Image (cartoon, rainbow over the protein chains, first blue to last red):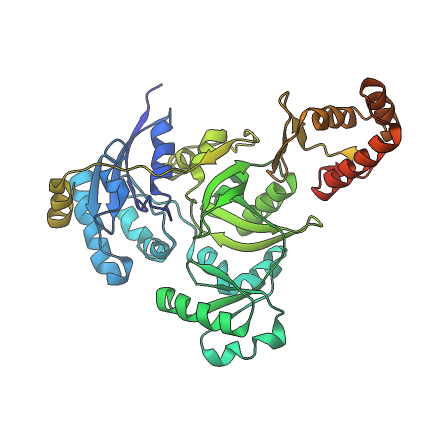
Length: 348
Length: 81
């Protein structure tokens, strides 16, 4: 059977010690026996490793940060589209999703497809809304609140017992054992990610995660549970293993059914010693450990691309339990001329 | 006491709990006892088997077996029947 030839633009090429999902997504696409993919890398910084991984990324372009404005962002994408005829964009970073959802219909007019959740789906799972989300979809969530000032930190002891979690609206989470530690984390997080800062009850147990793909009609196309086996000082998985956890998969499938979730997602849950599950976060995109799912038998990036291209994809239920991943770092050798090209011409 | 269904033991004594993702390494005798537990042998049967096969008194082995089973339970590797 002939492979479907497509050009896919991908962000999140920051394959560092806090990796974006771009390279693992590309590996899934390149492994596909159904797709013949030309990969266009979209990068924000000229040292994002993906730009320099020429066996994974065919051409890379610099793009402005979403904070530079939707118009500038769109213009750059369309400029690249003129050269590359992009069929599909897979954004992989939380901070750019709002912009891509906003641009979805315009991109569609230019024949650029996306496969993303709706504004409502993105918004209702925001860390600050998690309690309401839990009530709406009948999932246990830790007690939480949002704060925007020091003044509110003084009142936390009336509602929470220490330790508590202090989280940024996009990334970062720290455990605080006292008011002083909350202040310190609040300063660090608000300087980096802005306000509000999220305060969450600390639920004791084991963190388990699921990578999943919803088709927007309530069907779970793929879902694989994983436990991190080794965590870096940034809280990122450096090793993980696929689990046999039917209860967790049922929670995932019910959530995707009830919310009609469209696109990739990662559920972060805590399993307590008495076998209860608490949702601590939903990442509204494919996570960086997605290649474990590919290795375990569910090629989620391929399925997402096929769905986006209007192809039928049957739900996948089987996967290998006890499949592990181990991340590693690797020194790429490049030429200064490459850095010059991407910095001056914005393309390599 | 029953060993959890999620447990698999390799020939080398490597134990994997597919629900929690935890793995453990067993020495020779720990593996032998674990295999007997997986077969569904009772504690009395295991004591008889091991003390017949090895030079150890039933009283001493019973104490060690009890510790071992407590440890399995602590790591959630057992289920109540």
